[in-house]
Image (cartoon, rainbow, N blue to C red):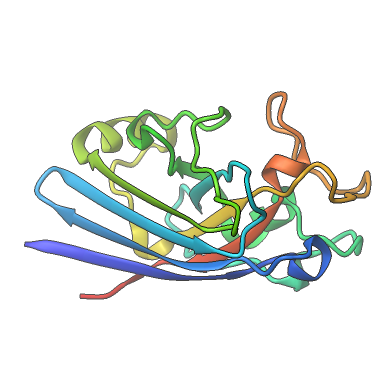
Length: 186
């Protein structure tokens, strides 16, 4: 039996960054495998984009951030401002999601048109074991999570009030540019 989930990914911060990124994500769980496919359009071109699912470790329903989450009224919804409704960063969609290693340079890169497709088959038991170590629960509960796509070019002016430094990566890397609610489709 395969369980399916999907998310329609909509723009966030589009009025400030000059692009309105959008796309879709699908997830399929069968046996010991999670298959992920994310297709994005109109992202900032020729650059890497971090992408993750976010949620609450206590199982509370995560929701996508909107302009209403701009708590400091600087015109941007930054990574820290998403946490109130979306929770914390949980699983990366990178070269090895099962390792749950967040800050690095192994995420998809958009082409010259701002498009990219990410596809990965993930060993579910390894991902669940690492998820349990991090969050105390092995079940992913995708239906309670949201997806975020991050990243703008360095030439986009971000006010100092835009938070999002992760390791040595600044807010240009972590700024959310698109988000989607993950829902069960079975």
